[in-house]
Amino acid sequence: MQGNPADTLARAHARASCGGGDVPPRDLPARAGLPGWRSLSSRHIFKFHFPPRMPAPPPARPVPGVGLLQGNKRTPAMAPPRGKATRRASETASGVSAPGVKGGASAEPSEPAAVPEAARPGARRCGPAGASGSGRKKPQVRARAARAEDQAEGPAAPTADAEPPAAPGHPLPRATARSRATARSVRAGRPQSGSPEGPGPGPGPRAPAPHLGRREEAPGAWKPRAVLEKLRLKRQEISVAAEVVNRLVDHLLRRLNSRESEFKGVDLLRSGSYYERVKISAPNEFDVMFKLEVPRIQLEEYCKSSAHCFVKFKRNPKGSPLDQFLEGGILSASKMLSRFRKIINEEIKNIKDTDVIMQRKKRGSPAVTLLIRKPREISVDVILALESRSSWPASTQKGLPINTWLGGKVKSDLKRQPFYLVPKLAKEGSRFQEETWRLSFSHIEKAILKNHGQSKTCCEIEGAKCCRKECLKLMKYLLEQLKKKFGDQRGLDKFCSYHVKTAFFHVCTQNPHDSQWHYEDLELCFDNCVTYFLQCLKTERLENYFIPDVNLFSRDEINKLSKEFLSKQIEYQQNNGFPVFDEF
Image (cartoon, rainbow, N blue to C red; front, side, top):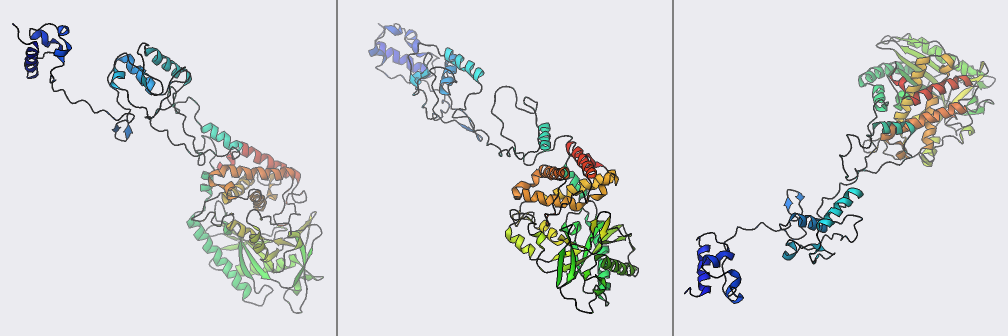
């Protein structure tokens, strides 16, 4: 007799649990000499609790919908082991259904994990809630369809566990802030689609837009900042030149004020490119004005030029040192300049510590040019200027158009300053009118260039830097290099830096905002200045910035052939990257 089957089964199970051999639970009845497993009734099987073997601790199951953290990167939540086809189907269903698949379910980040029954082979996820299906359809069909759609339509949308996309870059500048030359430069330096520098093969996210504010110049493109670096004045040269020039100027001022002369009371007014801080190449040219105040004068506009006038005294007290320069009650500019020139020539002979000579007089020029020969050659233009503190002449009423640029208040303050008259003679055909004086506003030009921005902090230490002065330097250098290259042929000697500066002021008026002169847009802003100057040459019209009725490019001043020649040369330079900047 075999005894109670349940007791025999319990004893066999206990031996297996205590190391009596690796006996699977379903083989216990046979090893115990009992009838087959299926011959036992459910009453015998479930009456006793059979303690299982102590299994190894299972791997940690993550919270449904939340991945594990590995370093700083989140990994997708783990899924229970399953068959290959079932795993593909479940992963496809738990993600985002491919576009174009009919009946596909969309993923939800808060979707719960599958119940154990859904993890069994033959089970699948379906529907937005992830309920169990009948298990009759094979999931492989859906997985293959999703992969085919992925390849046909491109990359799928990121899942909830995917890393967030990179933040987009700075926005692109507006298309209007690009010149033709700049566009060619950017296109040349931009990698083409599908190039080795681009993304790898296969679909992928779009790269963030680059910031083109501080772009790299394309190979072969001219580099304006490199040119400006070449034009930068060296501190040592500035120090040596300034010391020599200041010593000469101080000596002349003491001489003119130490004796009873026609020019006693003369004072210094520093002007010109060096004092405006737009001097280029080398500190070898200086302009200084010796101003002499003449009260109670009356101006009579010269009929052929609004920039020139005759000077008369409202009251002519006897014994005035200027009486000797009167011609019919009119103060003669040529006589006064001759006397001024003679005194300076006599005085430089008494300077022992400086080797200086006087240059030959240039016809029609208001300057007395001195040449310092040691330690290096330095040219100094000394200009006599009459100072008037009365209201500005009527010809200047529509001039100085800085209302939208620097403001109406600044304009009013500037027009309260005195104006000056220099002995620049008006031209009448091939002759000069000896008694005429020309209006001068060089001190106003200096003030504008010093405070050139709409913002009071423009180009200051704590303010944004603009490129206005850099554009003016490049414009001056362009004209200087072309005059070196072609000499005086075709009348290029008629053009001077004052023409460039006047055109530059007009460009500033047309582009008054600091945002239009970002330093990063130097190439574009310089191109705008060149284009405006070319327009003035072609139309033969360049208005004096202070006296709009005066055309600096009139045929009386410069002939048409000279303007056409300069225009063609500048156009060639603009279209070919300014090769003249690398010459000489």
